[in-house]
Length: 272
Image 1 (cartoon, one colour):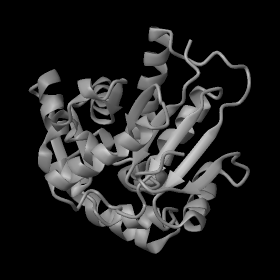
Image 2 (cartoon, helix red, strand yellow):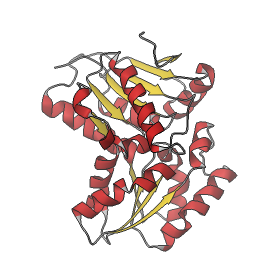
Image 3 (cartoon, rainbow, N blue to C red):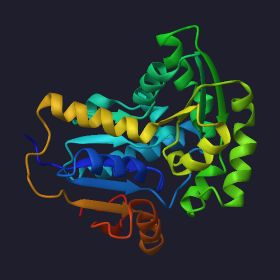
């Protein structure tokens, strides 16, 4: 057993969807979350900048003695192969592989859609992994850059006109392609699940990269014997790099107003 915390990071609030699922699956685990809100979004940055940011995020979490690191950011996950995982010292997992495996199991007509940031789509990471499982799978991908700032500002509900407009604008070609499975390849996007499902139709299965990563982590900890053995509720520490008050508003919106968590602003050189 290992009672050290699980480390999770994202460019902003998107990864809270992963935290939410971790809390449901493993309520007795401590979690340290980093949302790099001062530099969101990552999906419009160059590959080199994304890698630099990711290394700083990883270093911050390691200073909190985490037992594993979950990259709850589709953009960073798509370039994770450029980071020397052996040098990190703890297991690290991104969202791409768990989401791809879930989509492959879910699809019946072998037509899969992917929505993500521009940086994620341009790497072709999802396409390559799907092709490695089955070369007959047809993939339709679309970058959805405006959904990230909408999520960061809490505009995600089906009755929100901007959310509806951009969902329809981005997903039109994917719906026309006849996909039966859609990967939400950015962890901000599960916050739009209701409006996306309404537009795509109830017959289209939505694969949350956040939920799949959390499920992967739960299985990994159980199989390795590294799950916490405490009987009490785990401690949740939610860190951001910009305004803590604005971050707290989104935390309470996405995780509930009664969330019992420490919400603090940090610098990436912070050792506390």
